[in-house]
Amino acid sequence: MRRFASVTLHPAGDQAVLVEFAGEVSPELSSQIQSLANWFNRSVKEGVYECIPGFKTLYVEYDPLVYTFSVLQGLIHQGLCDMPKTAEMTSKVIWIPVCYDPELAPDLSDVAEINGLTVEDVIRLHSQPQYYVYFTGFLPNFPFLKGMPREIATPRLARPRVLVPGGSVGIAGEQTGFYPVDSPGGWRIVGRIPVRMYDRRRDQPFLLQQGDWLQFFPISRSEYEDLQELDRLSPYEFRIESLHKGRFMGENPVILTEGQSTVDDSREVET
Amino acid sequence: MTLRVIHPGLQSSIQDLGRRGFQRFGLSVSGAADKYALRFGNLLLGNPLNAAGIETTLLGLELEILGDCTVAVTGGDLGLQVDHNPAATWRVLNLQAGQRLHFTGGPKGCRAYVCVQGGIDVPMQYGSRSTDALVGLGGLNGRELRAGDVISANLHFVGAQNKTAHLARRLVSPRWVPRYEKEQTVHVILGPQEAAFTQEAVETLLGSPYRVSPQSNRIGCHLEGPFLQHKIGADILSECVPEGAIQVPSSGNPLILLAGRRGIGGYTKIATVAGVDIPKVAQSRPGDRLFFKAVTVEQAQSWWMEQERFFKCAESVLCSPLS
Image (cartoon, rainbow over all chains, first blue to last red; front, side):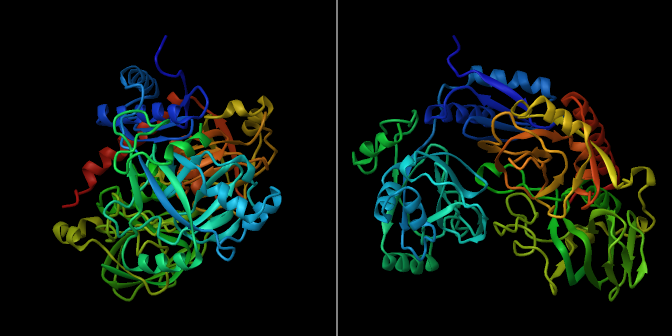
């Protein structure tokens, strides 16, 4: 038996292939996808432009002058055999302040009403879990997350907004996430982050990566104003906890920098 | 070698061949929607193929030459005039200070490229000069062009080259100039999710004309035509989407993604346009009709390789490397 999930290859035009992994979406599957991406980065020096993970797929963009589709198929199978079962990576928990003030959260009361909850329930349920970052893309630091409680799942707006302010935290079906920059969008907005989530003043502006965990924490309106003011002067310092390096981080993470904390309890929401 | 924007026209921005390798960080590839035309503009001027030019749409862009300038305009016939006189495209133009280039609207194609000798000099960000206006990267201050903007060529390159004279008579043979017809056959590779559609939907796509809708832009070419039925649903888990992907949302109207797309999408993709035919889609204008024809990956790749070998060969003969 092969020790990795079976895959199906779908050509995505003449310069890319989607490697679709069998199995349920999970941090473990995500780690396998990342492992194949890492193998490409390490072992293939020429002819592959980029490997981009999705929830169940790895998108491999290549130069047909270097690899034709049939040669690339062989290369992918070699990668699946050679790669470690799970990705080696440094994972972290990033704490993100969110103000759930109704003025900044135009859809908060609708989300509560649609789900038969109070606004306080929505805030509690939304800020409780730690969310696993499956991958980023679409916009810089736009995370694709899973693990939001079903109780607050709400369909997208029927009519998307022309402009959603950067930092807006939203719900779309069973997904949650935030808009890192001003953007059009149809997610239900339930809160706002006071600081720039894509900040080009930073040496390393891409804060989030696959395998990280996000923890939203509620702040008051006055804290929101203060943090916004401070962010104007210099980039906000997120509270970041490093997780154990070099092994799969899907469950029971070991926190190195902050000692054992409540993180393990909330992780159960995810699993 | 400087230009001033008198009127920005529609969706005018600075683009090169795109920003590759950063999609997983959320940066759009961007780049010229029609890279064939941009590359011919650069070949005419002896620029590297990846030099940045101005992409403009349909009509309205007006530029004033502030210092003597060697330029080439390629792409669709958008009614180019120099000082109110019709001017030729797909050839080198030597312009003097005070002259004006104006796209008055023309009969064919949707996008034109203004290339300048040396390429447009804006900062390289993440390996490209292409404008990604949503994120504010590339181009002139990370945005589309506005009236009053002043754009310079890469003078260092022009100075090093210092042999404009031999360029003056360069033009592209008509056999290499696309005809931008109102009805085009576009070759596609089925998938990656053709299995999410009924067999009838695949046959409908390949057997019916689709009309380009006025909603179309650099992000995507919106189409109207016979409904394409999904087997179960239109939505899939989000994943990376290639240029040329034909997404079909639940409305059943296809959308062909172009250079300005964001890298991730959650709709099923019935087929993907062959690389060599993406310029046809990028140049189709509202009302034009597209017919789709399926080919194998191998066939599409052999056309692509033939085209790319031509460009590599032409670049090595005609162009000087950037110093």
